[in-house]
Length: 281
Image (cartoon, one colour):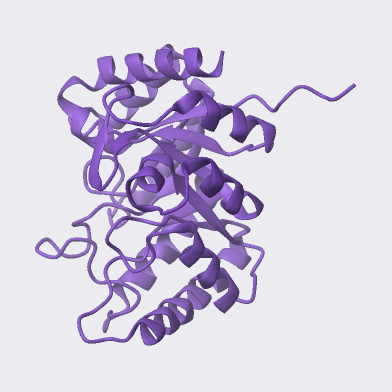
């Protein structure tokens, strides 16, 4: 008799709660029955450059334990390093080490909070740089960050992001090859992004990413339009996607990412978890 499929663990991204204090976010998510939180490092909830970061991390670790929430650390805040340049500087163009420093900080923060992963993405390729050189620079930068990841036992969960250098699962796997198949380099698959830009169907993207899949982000989306929508407002058929994740034995968080719902965040979070439970059932 085959064992039952692995239950999925649902999380919610703090970038969808930018008008709430972090402890309030955790309490709301726990009350709604979420299993975890995708914590974006930013000035809003947890500034990785705060002078009292150590104290904040101690308090946050206690709160996560009190609410019984898993956590994954995310570094996708668009203007954290450059208030005028979205997702800049990248590992491909940095001249002062700011992106490397942020990612290393994120790894240490993840270790302190008990997060097994740090989420990251490539950012846009610099103008005038060939694709081969861009991939090489990105891989060289990641190799440096992986040295810190090895020290702390935290994996890098790389997300293909629309309109960035690494925008598909296939290109993410190309990056993994350049890193020698490092065991601490994995994938964060965003289901909406896959529907938005991938040539292959979403289920094929899930299967292609499966050997390195660490985290999943989820929201609805329309083909060719990078806009995170509530479930049912886009084009994605979610029950087969969630069933495939269960069949593959995915153990990481499946985190809702609807940044545009911050003004109505508690209700968006409630509607989202109810939709996902029904889609699984």
